[in-house]
Amino acid sequence: MTMDRRNFLTSCSGGLAIALGATSPSGQAAGSGQTRRSIVIDAHSHFGYLGMFGQQRDVSFEESLAAADQAGIDKLCLCSIEALAFEMEGGNREVHRLMKQYPDRIIGFASVPSPYFGQKGLDELQRAVEVFGMKGIGELETSAAYPIDIPHWIAVLKKAAALKVPVLVHGSPVASARAAELVPDVTILLAHMGTGLGLTVGEWIDTIEMAKSHPNVYLETCTSITSYGQIERAVQELGSERIVFGTDTPLLDPAVMKAKITSADISAEAKENILGKNMARLLKI
Image: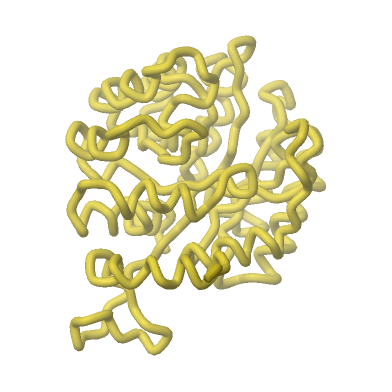
């Protein structure tokens, strides 16, 4: 007998309900007799044209939202691929449109496609936060040519600190450590546990070690390659309060990325912190 994806995910969720404080649609905690709701927030999601990623097919936002529903994700921190790749104003406006269309689901993150937009980029980020109501900045796409610790990116981080919003950074642990030191008041969410540039196989281990001495750096959990014990080691070394759940939707499967957390050998409290409580605290929601 075959089972479709929705039914499969539903059947899997039962064993996790008590551990994660899951609730029924009426708000009744599974197996407890008490009302309890543990929020799940995706700290790293995208929408828009995927041609820049080669063979990746286009995925509509409605399809991404349906996948989030199936995975049991309540809210998505959403940034535009258009804004982070080539056209910031139009892309950020589209995020704002989706924020208005899905006010209970979408948390807007504003992006700039390059560190070299200067004051125009800084003004766009301020408009996105203060006028559009976005609650974060990023994903900031860095590279070996323009890592997150160069002066132009540091200006963006300083703007984020002034606006009191976190920044999702696609960067290396070394450059992120330097940036965290230069702007100690900014909260850096280091995407992909620092493996986004693919510099070394064990880069996620280096990232955990770096974050131990840089308290304004949080680790975001989605990765293309899942090494054994990633989540367990991060919790052991940093504590669950410094880790946030992300999926990189639609580039990665949100159900698989969530399973990294729900299947990890960590406490139920740690899972709740990672899956949503930490981001709720950082975003003040």
